[in-house]
Image 1 (cartoon, rainbow, N blue to C red):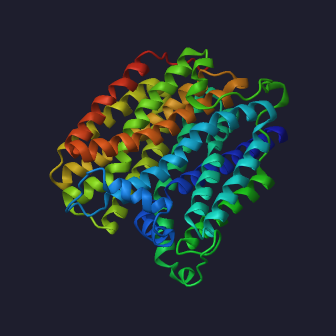
Image 2 (image 1 turned 180 degrees about the vertical axis):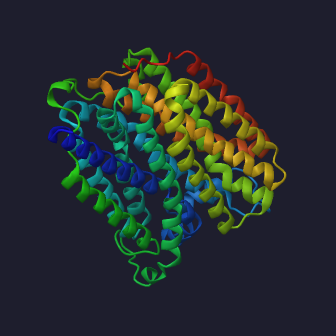
Image 3 (image 1 turned 90 degrees about the horizontal axis):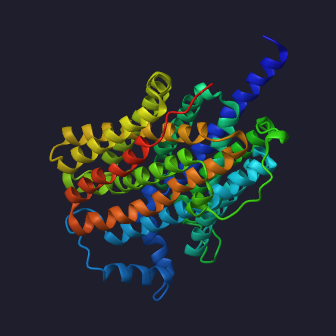
Length: 443
């Protein structure tokens, strides 16, 4: 092996490492507050005072007429968590194609440095969120910065040969799975051991709070990522392959400018698939409490199973099956598994079919997400990777904003069985788009 080849391999491994940690931290940032919602609402509501924003919010929700009697959760807590989660996802939706297009123009490295720096700032603000407005500001900054998923994915595409593109995208899925496990775990542990921070709270805009430990832990991880990025990440997009177009409008609004039909269909398939999946993901804990009276410890084990299944399925099955089966066919298999998961969960009256549904759901998203990403990438030219993958990721982010709200309304208005059966029907749409996408050539 020549020296140049050896150096290139080292650079590629460094790229994979940095991107892996970046995506992992973005998922941690999205999910770390999941176990904190009830206490977080109570804490900031107490400080809000009568007539404040949160007081008005809770009062409005209580007048909607939803009932969660004997379900083990408060509807205002559910909506509060949904709004914060949707805010984060909407900002991803808005900024993913912007970051992606800028990275096509000036390179991946400067955009990654700016966006990861923004992630650090968001966590730092959360650490000192003495008021609800500071918490909201931290989520805004973090959501804007997390749009760098499109840039991270484009960097993987830059250094991955076409014939192994799905394997590279499976690495992205593993990072998602690990973040899905560690995000809620970090939040729960920080809450359990963060009581000392509560004794030093400030009534002002900035100040320590009971959730400062979670923010501080996330900030230190993000700072590590920023340092590693600055020291080890090398530019993956050469100057001669860059695009001169300026960034335009965000998100789905750019889908009409994607003149590549297979890429457009990949984005739409991902959009509708993620509406179903994110709705299931959001209501799953409520289903477990309603049907089986799960405790927080039971929910932790449930999410651990989901995360481990995602990691194994993407790290082993997708990497081995993508080439012989083809990305499109593997994505279709994932949609079928997802529809079956919805049916099992809709009808599950005992824990055995419930866990069968969880396993099918995990394998389904493990098959679908990286292969759809690979399809969008493989049908893109090198100069449009960042833009196309930005629109692709933005489509998923918009779906993550819409899915939980739609699923929550369906769940509480019509019941869990109808809500989950509807999710299975909705998966017909991504299947239709996938049937109209050709398997790309890899030579």
